[in-house]
Amino acid sequence: MAQDGKINPFEMAKEQVDIAAQHLNLDPGSIEKLKSTKRELIVHFPIEMDNKKVKIFTGYRVQHNVARGPAKGGIRYHPDVDLDEVRALAMWMTWKSAVVNIPFGGAKGGVECNPKEMSLHEIEHLTRRFTWEISLMLGPEQDIPAPDVYTNPQVMAWIMDTFSILKGYSVPGVVTGKPIELGGSLGRFEATGRGVVITSLEALKHLNMVTEKAKIVIQGCGNVGGVAAMHFDRMGAKVIAISDSQKGLYNENGLDVKRVLNNKAKHRCLVCEPKEETEITNQELLELKCDILIPAAMESQITKKNASRIKAKVIAEGANGPTTPEADDILNDKGVFIVPDILANAGGVTVSYFEWVQNLQELIWSEEEVLDRLTRIMQKGFKEVLGISLSQKIPMRTAALVLGIGRVAEASRLRGLYP
Ligand code: NAD
Image (cartoon, rainbow, N blue to C red):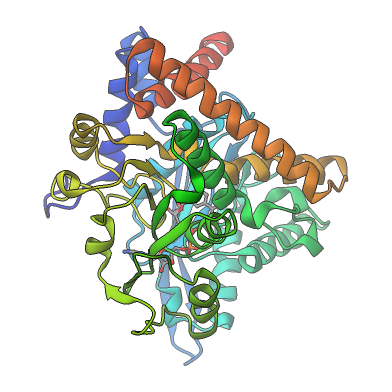
């Protein structure tokens, strides 16, 4: 815990390693290595803003572990980005790739900025200069960024263009989540949200619950939350609440998801139509009675302060690190079934891997092929994690960490120490 009471996500991520290590019989040296990041770059760089004033921004790129393949992980633009957040997110990327058995290591990047207060022109300048600053770490065989909070396919296009200009030839494989026209994969934009839905359905099946009767609550309506809402709606489940950073909307009989998301896209904020729905806060949303709660926004949303009031039967973590270890204990005692982040939101890295494979081989797969492969990988990941959870009688999160960390530890052991 940080001094101001804010939960430090890196401390939280390291605590998770200690919990999993108890089940893995790892030696203390290996545990220390798994808890350490491999490379960290902090950059301070100037951008000329639209008002002609120069502003200095701070950005980070962290590679956590590359034992199983090139470093992979998104880039986030948010005012709260800091080194420990990026370190934690990089570590979770390592475990996530390993849980779904994708041959990538883990990385993450971020810039402390508020893109909501910046013009497109300023965001482009910031992206290009940040890419230049961290370019020594990037490359299709080294480190491959992707979108995260408040970054999108256009930002990925600028990263690819800037890196390609530096190299003198086009390098589509340096980044995933690109627009289709630049070598992006069909199905990538929707992949994380779809993965959350696929693993949620597996959880419902395991618990003998019926999809069509399920009531869903989603925090965040961006790439992950918005896409998950659309898919649940299409399948006949009821999305009863959704939120953005400002507010939530609630209708116990089910929201008109299409209208809500169209309004969000048009007005860049959620619009409450009082005849159709009630406005609620993000805190109220998390505590609603529902079958599946999907945190799909930021870290540390479910903490020891609100965990005892959570009424969901299943939590499928679209966001990275939304639940603190103390909250985990409370939820496990209450019998809430958790599909942990490193499994639930692994659809993004899975289709990012497909995109990278297509780029390197100059292939284009159909959307059907992508979705088919995604579904199989997510279902297999769920089955493997559930199997460990049931056989070892440990919570789903610990089981996912045991699977992911175990694979990384074994890869490290086989590679050995150099020199
Ligand atoms: P996004 O920028 O598309 O959407 C973020 C959403 O969260 C927006 O609706 C925003 O309004 C909302 N939000 C921001 N701050 C909030 C707050 N304090 N309270 C409530 N809502 C808030 O981002 P995204 O790509 O959907 O990412 C969401 C989460 O999913 C993050 O934790 C990210 O790391 C994780 N994730 C994303 C991907 C991906 O492929 N995009 C993959 C794996 C995990």
